[in-house]
Image (cartoon, rainbow, N blue to C red; front, side, top):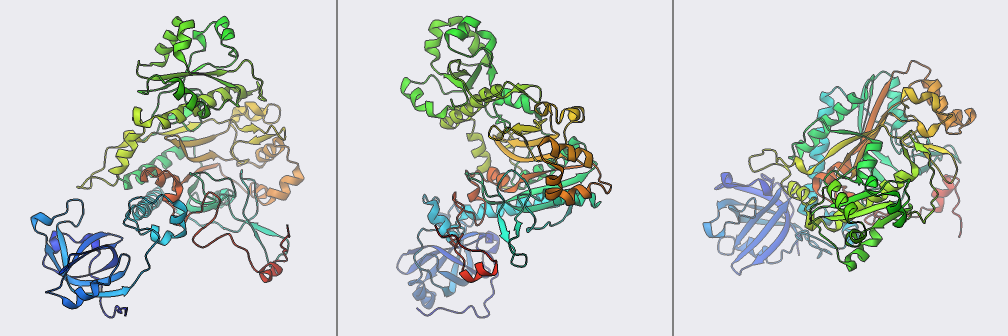
Length: 625
């Protein structure tokens, strides 16, 4: 087949922008053939570009040359069309198509490029094989659903940039090649050719640089920053990701909250969702007690502690540890489960934390009728609700301390609440079709972007943002026996807890906060340490010697001596925000070129081996296994 050249032909309109106002106009449209239908003397092409699809009509009697060319056209061919827009007759109007009231009657057709039969069609709504989609990502990205996600991401990022600029923030880039610092995950390392044996690290976050910017007097910084972490992956994790990173001087915690709420509301506005502000706040221990998680999903009923309902002898009979919470978990409208269903649900329960599941309330009711009636009352359970109980197993010993975490909850108590919280989510996911708590989100997302008049969809009841504050400053590492920072070592403790940093680290609360929504962590931040003496004390509490601290953070400790202002900030995951607003189940749906769960780019086949010459230049040697 001889292909046409574009020549001087200039596109006048995008496919999706044509409507009745263009009727009678001569137009030039270009794009990919989405579908082809041959009716003999009439050939219909659905022509697709980023803006949408328009129907093209080739009439053999009116344009025999173009019709003859169209006989060889197949899906995914790239073509240019010159023709006249005309109104469709009433019988052929397609109400399911944005351009369904018009079509383009062809005068000239140019075939700019042909195409092999693709491994899947961009016209398909769903492609089950994700690895195939990632290998042929350039075809997958032609699909309207994927293009909507990419466009939505652009709109959200633009709205955030504009909002932060209006709030006085400067967008400043920080280095990609820096030194390795402890950020909670493994670094990706880059060997230096000029300095043999030495390595740069790709940033897990711009943490130290944004604090340096505050020391530099730049007052308010932000960046939509690329970050890199070599960690085990899940549906909501990627080895390289994008975060909305910001820092400001002289803030109270509430100052950070108001800034973030403003740009998050702007991001949701860009997707057609009106998100009320300010967001509610909850402390870490409240969140654990009420939701069994530090990233609460408030679309479901809260956990209820029913310990007081049972007497000591009742708990002994049930082989429940009386020193631990007894928690009722309610999932609405699921109803009583059969024995078979209960058995199938057992793998959803995490008993490794010393927790015990009581899921047969009918049997329990026979032995303790009054207590079970009181449990139903306290939990607010209707007859059609599913109710289960989670408690500590008196017959199981677990490696967990009775030390109060930040003076409130013990490690063992947190384990029970967490086990109940995890079961709460797993049961809700499994029975979502029955209780409908998650379906609201799907309806809101379907309408995202506004109605036909551009008005915001009032779907904010589907999205529940919440601030979680006052996290424990440290977490105990059972393997090393050391206390580790629960956030990062540059987070400021509460002033009233400062004198216990070394003597009682478990009781110290951090000025650390998370923003959560619908069971996902959107971002984390903190008020930072700005005095060298306090920062040194934090390093000491972590068992770090002065020499080690100087070796790893000498430049930063020195910077703190030159008039460092109080400062704080936060980083929110842009990918995760887009994922929520797109109604996607994985970050891979909202990142143009993601990696697989094995951190592999199937399209470009990376990572890959490099030549011996390249290794020699870097003075590296491949180890033979």
